[in-house]
Amino acid sequence: MASLGTAVVIGASMGGLLAARALSEAYEKVVIVDRDTLPDLAAARRGVPQGRQLHVLLSQGRKALEELFPGLTGELQRAGAPLVDLHHDVNWHNDGYLMRGAPSPLLALGLSRPLLEHGVRQRVTALPGVEIRHQTEVLGLTTSPDRRRVTGVRLSGETIEADLVVDAGGRACRSPVWLDELGYDRPAEEQVRVGVTYVTRTYRRHPGLIGDRSGAITNAMPGSPRAGIVAVMEDGRLAVALSGMLGEQPPTDDAGMAEFAGTLPLPELAEVVGTAEPASDAVLMRFPTSVRRRYERLRRFPDGYLVVADGLCSFNPIYGQGITVAALEALLLRQLITTGTTDRLARRFFRGAARLIDAPWSIAVGTDLRFAEVEGRRGLKVRFVNAYVHRLHMAATADAVLGAAFLRVLNLVDPPTALLAPGIALRVLRGFFHRPVPTPPAAIVPDPVAPRLP
Ligand SMILES: Cc1cc2nc3c(=O)[nH]c(=O)nc-3n(C[C@H](O)[C@H](O)[C@H](O)COP(=O)(O)OP(=O)(O)OC[C@H]3O[C@@H](n4cnc5c(N)ncnc54)[C@H](O)[C@@H]3O)c2cc1C
Image 1: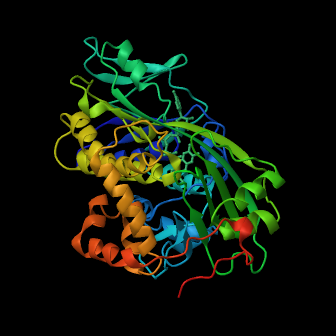
Image 2 (image 1 turned 90 degrees about the vertical axis):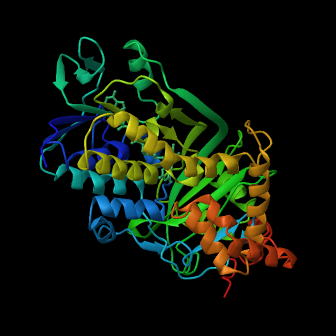
Image 3 (image 1 turned 30 degrees about the vertical axis):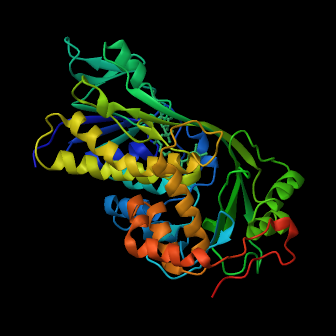
């Protein structure tokens, strides 16, 4: 295939690395520019503060990464990250109801965000024609005299010419401002205020801790805007994340964390926080608002320019979708640049990306709208689906088919409409008369680990 020339990617985080991987198939040269110092090892860094928070890589995300980097799963496993069957190895206490487990093909990796980014960065660095320049900030764009085409990026005292520039600068990327300066409209922005606060800490796993489980999770519910997750990671450590919505803030001190964990219907979490030795400090981060930018609705957009990943959509992190969507966007980009023409690439990419984003955005926003304090339109559909999914969680305590269907949607394998398929609806209806007992808050459970359902 003929080379498309040079591409510049702004940002060497997950979105930028994955876009660069896609571009390397059609562009002779791909230059990734990041203002941060990129570590040689798997370490957190300043430019990606969320890297210190627990990250979940959804099953569909792991598959997409594997498609972009064959063998990556095995490499990360060899680096110590366990492969986890999300339905069989994890205790899901959805709305307080413990889901019945079963073996599944939903495989995820238990690993820290720095290890994932490091593994991907190593693979991208090894690609022919790809160069990563760190400690280099992009200050603006260069364009053709009529400003119809972006021709490169402006650095301090230097420019890099490019046939395509991809902005993967994250949620706070400068694209809306740069477009404005060039005389284009800014994209319309949808915002959903969720007021999430995360606290992540890692612990050493002592024998017997959380039994044979690889993780456990409980979600926030109306009236109880607290959630928690414990997950295996490399080096045999366990990562714990406590989160609060709508201004609810988990503490970062030992006693406060134990008290917070005790209020959740998640005995595994209370056991870890209450008995295990911490392996790190507790780190707090706030995420005020989910943001979706509607580039696909712009009537004018310069040629030779794209925006990807969090710059397009920054999801409520509780649903763990960001990296998976970035990987699906990279696959879309690869398909567009390797088949056919690059004419109207931006229009075709933004339209395709919007279709990819629709489902995860509707899952995240639709679920957040369960909380009366979250502003947004609650159509009949949203209210019906939320009530229906609550009933599904109740029925899933006894029916593993329902748990599997829910997890396939959560992991972006199936569209949300799959939960309304007649076979699933019938099972939810059948479970209507089944009255499961919800998991009580851990502080009032005598045995710290909930038994696994057979
Ligand atoms: C608390 C929290 C928890 C999360 N948990 C999960 C999870 O469990 N699972 C999941 O899939 N996702 C999660 N996410 C989202 C995930 O972190 C992002 O989707 C992912 O990092 C992709 O983002 P990105 O590459 O677009 O931007 P970022 O990761 O924000 O990176 C942007 C990069 O661009 C660089 N940059 C920016 N501007 C410039 C410039 N002008 N010049 C040069 N360099 C520049 C920055 O230095 C940085 O390296 C979470 C997010 C948060 C906030």
